[in-house]
Image (cartoon, rainbow, N blue to C red):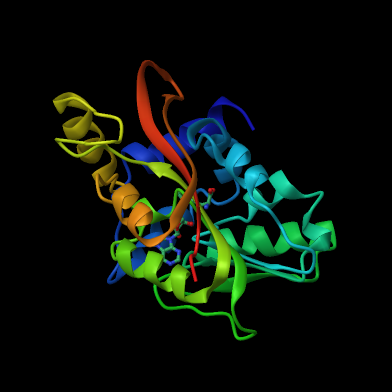
Length: 242
Ligand SMILES: C[S@@+](CC[C@H](N)C(=O)[O-])C[C@H]1O[C@@H](n2cnc3c(N)ncnc32)[C@H](O)[C@@H]1O
């Protein structure tokens, strides 16, 4: 993958309008032209994923659900532990990304890992409560993100872990979280909105309210091809209290 593959991705991110009659349609419309090149570009855009996924305690035989998991590439960060899982589900609405995920799992011989086409706000595993739920840069693309977090809480066992990494902006008065200035709070939501990505000041406070915080990191990262700006993102690891 090189510059021309990046150009294709940049066209989808910056120029091509996203169409669709509903949210699922819009997700597939946005991703269908970039599914094959997705992983290479997102490695440089979506920071903090590997660090978060490797911090999560995976119980032997446990069940892991990655909501809005796309191509399933995040499981490669924990490839050494995947064989010890009982089951893993990568849930997403974009069928073209899930096709990449299915091929990945087949090639790795991970028969216990499934790519599921479903909505993260309502989908529940048929085989009961799970040990880990993760959202990697998916909450900002889920309009009813609060329903997705509540759905995650419902599917987690008491003591189960939730890991979230995503873009965000702070509230105007951030209290005990990092304070972002007016430009950051205005620029990033405007920049991302054309791709239906909505960095929010409320994800983190909502997560902290619903789960016991185990680890929280607020940081900034480089944007490919725009070296002078840094996007804010957070990593949150929490536990469901019984
Ligand atoms: C920026 S991508 C992140 C994909 C992947 N987690 C990663 O880290 O590369 C956001 C993903 O959220 C998915 N998504 C958005 N809304 C969703 C919903 N309501 N239910 C399931 N997936 C959703 C999109 O289809 C897309 O694959």
